[in-house]
Length: 364
Ligand code: PEP
Ligand code: MN
Image 1 (cartoon, protein in one colour):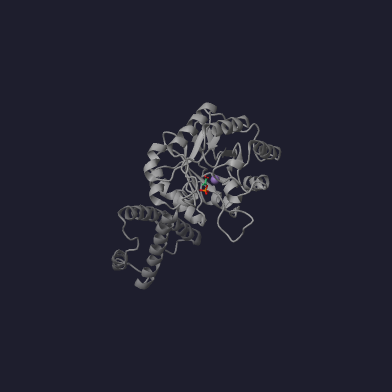
Image 2 (cartoon, protein in one colour; image 1 turned 90 degrees about the horizontal axis):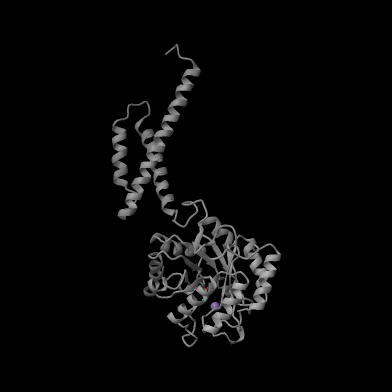
């Protein structure tokens, strides 16, 4: 003993510290694996009986010089940290950036959403006639737009309002999109229609009123068609992410989030665009985020600045309602813009450097 120098003893301590660290990390890895098994079996993570059994075993083997209560205290700290690790892991949803650091890029027929180049989704609130779709399809394509929206199933606030053309509307959308080389986005409201809809639509929209229709979310999670999920009228950001988790946990990871305004006391706009939701969603999740500038504002006169704000805040694109003749539209007539107004909006965004030129990628 007397021959040992301070340096030698310190070197030994350093070595033991490293061994302890390695063992603690190994232990933590096993704890995480146990946590996942418990989660799969639906078993409670905290197991006081098992903890007592482990502590008793350790104390019984305590060779000293630490007394039993100190050993108990030290190991309890380790157990507590392990439990925390299991809890933290449970909190990391599949949609969370903590689970996946890289951005998810949703790709449909060669169109990429979320790759850093903002996209524009445009089209009428509702699909109404073949002629209407022909005019809007041609006009949008001339502007380089490839993401065509249009509602065939309309979840209207009043049961007396136009409810949409249903399957016939999906067929008209598909015909138009195929003619002009576009990608179809349309809302589906019934779980039983999801499978059928995949024949016609390239991206299934789940609307604000259905964001917490859990059976619909599960059905959308069971197919491999990308899903555009809109934030509920009064949903928190966390609730939106949990709704996306319903889809992703069923195996469909191709999800686009959409901020479309929330209910507040403000009456100047139809809803209040929660612009801060954009950077928060981008930070918390790896999924692409779009901003619906039409439903969030309910107006035509502030679309350019609102779109610029959305893109400046980091949105992966915008959605806007465009109708060849908004004054006669069967739904949302007040907020839809015509093709000339749309062209002006695009000019403003392109000239401001908010959108790339030429507009977008071609459809394969
Ligand atoms: C829509 O986009 O057609 C629509 C109904 O929007 P939201 O679900 O956001 O109200
Ligand atoms: Mn609408």
